[in-house]
Image (cartoon, rainbow, N blue to C red; front, side, top):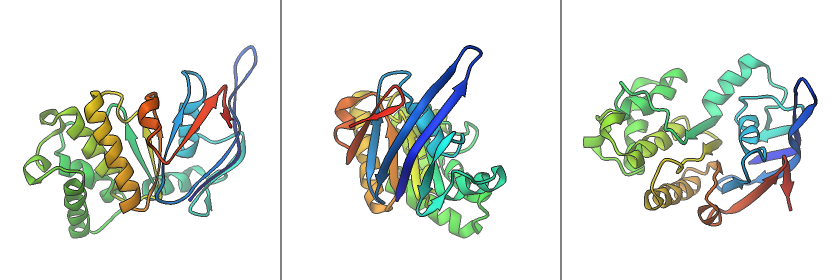
Length: 222
């Protein structure tokens, strides 16, 4: 479960303070797929960075499966991100000179998962997202955009994270492929019992998630 309480992030510029996120609170149960929507500059990306422990809040707390990550030290956060948080990006961020299978193996290697176990997990995940053995050996350049995003999703799931954060995961895809990717994320949230939070500009697709949070000027709209 993800619990966010009175979360705020303030940036200091030369002229004034900017409240990128202001007093945001919400809860997302395990196995739910939720979306965050809002105009450019509303605080979506900042909120996602805070949830992913890529930045620290000015105030408030973030609990993931009962673990408060808000006050963790930097070294502890690196390990926690590796074990408990998965990321899916608009631009896929796959390693170009590695095969699809090797890309999914990578986070498990960092987590020191035994070799045979990580190989079985990687193959199972790629099958689960719809990529058979023939495509598992291909490098990203020989895969379509939708297939690359499927690899990225499998990679995000590799270490069985409690939370997956997806930043505009369909932004580089056509509408039909984008819908397939969203449907896939929705089903994986349930089958993997993983909380998934996505930022999207597509209100039609966002409306199909379990819940939609709307941000405006860093504040959650009720």
